[in-house]
Amino acid sequence: MPEGTATIVASDAEPRVIFQGPASAVALIGPAFNGVVKVLIAVLLFSSERLWQRVETAPWSGALTAQLARASVALQPAISNLVDTTAEVRKAASNSEPNSTVSPAALIFGGLKWLGWLFILLALLHIIKAAWMWLATRYLLTTHRIEIERGILSKHILNLELWRVKDICYSRSFWDFFFQVGRLRVIAADEVMPDLHIGPIPGARSVYDQLKHARLMAGQRAGAQAMGVAS
Image (cartoon, rainbow, N blue to C red; front, top):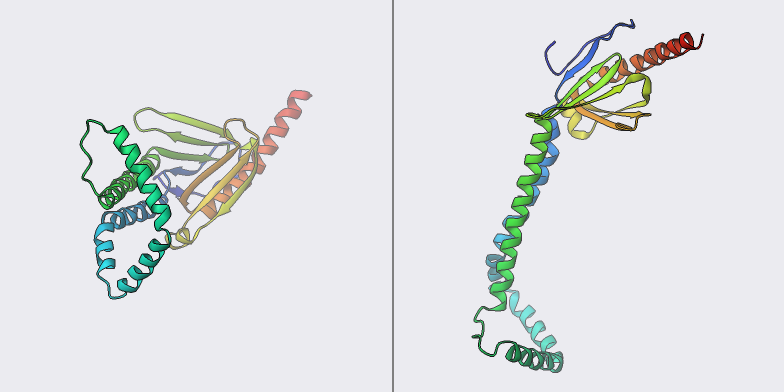
């Protein structure tokens, strides 16, 4: 069976495949958008010094400068005390060291540029993590159990029997509607996978209907086996 397809299953006791394959690439849209936003923020931080220079040369900057000047006059006594205290502390801390010639504005804009590189690093890590999880995850949904295989070089398989499932929910987001995919949420009485999220996968509504039916059949089989053991 080709990956990423759903098939109609019969209500017999033999396990049959409902869905097999990876999640849809639509799962990468959210992380990609998040990464683009972080990169745009980084670009703004990189260009902060240039933007500030344009603000200073703007026609309305004169009135703003006058207001700031009046505010600085009102705060002059407090600023003078702060400057005197800072000078004494700096003189005591740097007896043999030369005074720094770096302006406060250069320090601020330099810090903003470093913050921009941090945003770019976070965006790359977020996108790489999402792409890795998408490539490394495979689903196998049958009429008896749900298997999730994770890993590329090393493998880790999680198994959930359908008779343990309490409820199955179906959902579809705005982007899922345009790409004809959906998501499933499986709530089970299981310690390892009590709340399982699957998708987005193609044909999710058909998979949802078949899983609901298979869950009922699995519960009937489990009940019949329990009655047989008891008798």
